[in-house]
Image 1 (cartoon, chains in turn yellow, green):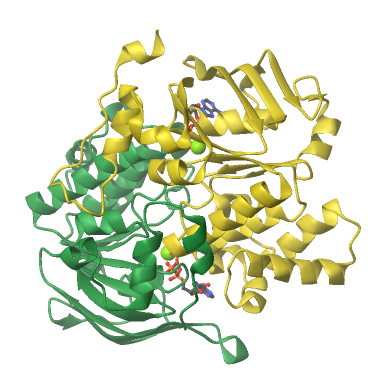
Image 2 (cartoon, chains in turn orange, cyan; image 1 turned 180 degrees about the horizontal axis):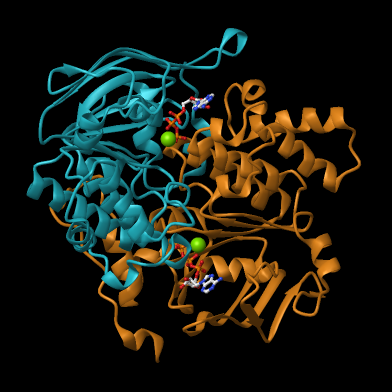
Length: 278
Length: 258
Ligand SMILES: Nc1ncnc2c1ncn2[C@@H]1O[C@H](COP(=O)(O)OP(=O)(O)OP(=O)(O)O)[C@@H](O)[C@H]1O
Ligand SMILES: Nc1ncnc2c1ncn2[C@@H]1O[C@H](COP(=O)(O)OP(=O)(O)OP(=O)(O)O)[C@@H](O)[C@H]1O
Ligand SMILES: [Mg+2]
Ligand SMILES: [Mg+2]
């Protein structure tokens, strides 16, 4: 499989009044035309890994890496101007909190249309039509009505799909999807994943799916990167996630309630400091 | 404890009139946990918002302890019933510290012993007092959600309305919050109305579950029926088949129910 993206020894460090926070430490992986999952507990560095690839790290953060290479380009050395050409058009990221990322005073449909016009030379009318199509593609019912709603008027799951529509519209080579379906009901979640699946299998896109749902990742992805404390604990074939040997991965698998058998108390993850040292 | 009869909620006017909830009825006994699941946009959050009177255009009957609610928010029912919102980022004021957030309801309701109530609420939800003077952006997502639960509990309500209380959290924090909610319900004899799109979560937490689609209940089932996958309704069966894992063929086979 040819590689779309190579990340070698990536670290992200934030300066804070209480000293440096090492959010990502020495992370390496390759992404091909595949579905790569990143799982791990809250704060383990999943989002910052995704953001570093697009150089979207907050002002108090520093990115260091052996290399971040996309399609023969050196992202690490790229200028902000080059990055603006890459972001959205070539690599796009579906952010974790959709309603935070939408403009509160612009109709959601117009925001999708605008995303299209930035990357194409479409007329306002074409962009309007394309935005309606995209709303339909992400399984939004009554897309004509929803087009004219403002972000506070759409439900949680609708907001998430509107963000997905905006990111899919420029037809990028890589999508980094940060918890893209966490607010969706399970049937819509499956349909949205079906859509992303088609983009990978039919159009050869590369997908990084960041998620805390291990069951979903193991059934949807090809490979999974398991992160803890900014580090990669292990990289597994997705289908083998339930055979994972690392106690952290096993712990995460056990925490989730199961539909089939009810437990009175859910197991809690027991963290071990040695996971970060050896 | 809660009785809802023929609840209808609309948004907009004239040609933009939209019926978000279309005649929903249910009863929740004291100490019971009742779940709402269903399609995105089917009106789950809207039902909770109507019960907390955060939305004005509703009709039907909402009774708490056999007393019908009026359309205006009043202090005594606000104290009895608290809501934890779907969006942990949006529901905490970004420029208020954890302390400010917990103090506000105490001030509104003129409650004394504020310091000890705040410390108690932090300890109830397992938050260290080191976090007391931090801002929401300085704590993790799971800690923010604990703050939201602490704020809801600080007035010692009898009813909690929980809108996707763990959907923004990772599984390890989710397990902690769900265990916490289970323990609090037992300790304080609370009644829960809980929305979640995760069937395993509602199955774990709730006694009875209503399934919604397009503003209506399609059926009400017990947690045991959900576990044994014995629903009557085709939409519910589709939900169960989508639960837990992705399957390309299943995803493509989904139909929409009107
Ligand atoms: N601007 C910042 N300043 C200081 N620390 C930060 C900053 N942004 C993120 N961090 C820290 O970096 C670490 C990794 O954060 P990241 O957002 O990658 O976590 P995550 O794995 O995506 O978690 P979640 O599942 O909760 O989204 C966290 O400890 C976080 O508090
Ligand atoms: N202020 C508003 N103005 C207009 N329409 C609204 C408003 N608030 C909600 N709606 C509409 O009401 C319907 C129900 O929304 P609600 O938020 O209750 O859905 P939900 O079942 O909670 O969905 P989700 O699982 O996605 O959170 C949606 O179609 C939504 O667009
Ligand atoms: Mg994140
Ligand atoms: Mg909702």
